[in-house]
View 1 (tube, one colour):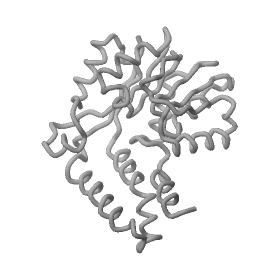
View 2 (cartoon, one colour):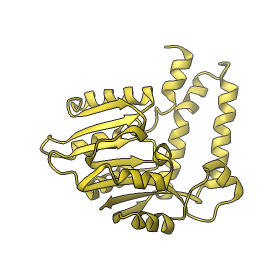
View 3 (tube, rainbow, N blue to C red):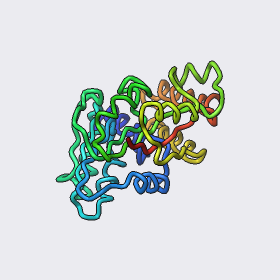
Length: 244
């Protein structure tokens, strides 16, 4: 493996999923999502699809099926490997495709941290309504402001972020009923930010003299500095189980 390949694989190596979420919290969300026998599950912006795989596994009859949609080749390859390792490769398919191009409804739809791929929070909640079958459920994960952001925090995170009450009210105004709401706690956030850096931090320790090391060291130091000094405790993440 080349140094470039090694660095690419290190990017998400320490992460179970690319969102601030503990296994206990994930178990709760899947319970609230209520995967039924034979359910069709779609994960838009799935990454490597860890939560999708767990959702399909939650059907004790083994008849649920799932599709993960993303544009990241490396993440999709990891998802296919995970599916094969868990004997789920006959039930779960990973497709390289823009999430915004997906048109096939499902019984359970996951969209976690991927609203940007659907045009932002409002556009995502509107378009996802066409993808959830009658009686189905949507697990929607999206960012919100826990406290009024500084100008610097807004510049880092981006525009269009709402406070939590506004996010919930906006979902309600679009016809969704909030069946469950929970937010990432501080430990989940700290673990997410740490593991997002961890694989490349380990690479730096292994390859301190590599030509890419200095630039990467600066990049990771900036990210950690921004997190602890700018948006930690200000930018939050909500998980909503929604029905119509």
